[in-house]
Image (tube, rainbow over all chains, first blue to last red; front, side):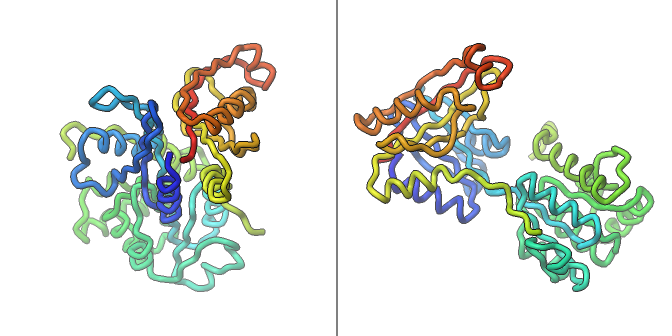
Length: 236
Length: 110
């Protein structure tokens, strides 16, 4: 690999830009590919890079001319955006950091999102929809709403559904969730949107304490990340 | 208490810094694995001309061999693509119950 290629790769990683290094295994020439920035998926190699990035798996592929190329995926870091600096957010944010996520917590209620309650975590006191607009969730982002409060959770969910976030979860009982979906339907959202919202949030493991609920959420987020549903036939 | 995010290995950063300091540098990358290989595809090791290294491509059983190859690549150029079998015996000695295999690509940072 050339030093200037390496410097560019490091700059891309620092800028949290998805980059795939394609290295010719017979000679070592390296080329940087940016599958997320290509129009319409791109030709063979770019499409292979996009697929490797989506699976988050580096791999060897064979180019059209028979050369073997190693596609080394450098995905931007995983992020978790938590709406509601409530009790559950405390263990959840700590567990998410351990699992490799950059965590941001959004809550416009000052006494909730305090540095004292969440030492070292990125905190925002913007309204959730404004905060999510600024944080620009992408396909490496999980979004979890925890407030139960429609005026905080609903705008967050509407903005979340407009993004490519790989996971969207909303805390609340089955009844709370049904009422939530009824409100969101009035805002023009549909069943296909609702299929993306995990509610009640978390795997059903009988969790009771905040830490246990955080475990169930982290487990569900991990499943969504590592075992994504296969795209439906004929889906765009 | 504050929590640091899980530290990511600074292998490529180290490679760039060593090269900028004028050292001869080679990168070793796991490009394929079979069976229970200890480190996943994409794991990297950076080696300088003196044999100092950062990172890992296995649980410790092939690092010595990789460093030796890498120093040759630094001296002579070119690239190497090497299969390493982890024999059951070797695997036991580093605490792995079963053998795996991995393919490592070694290149000089030009």
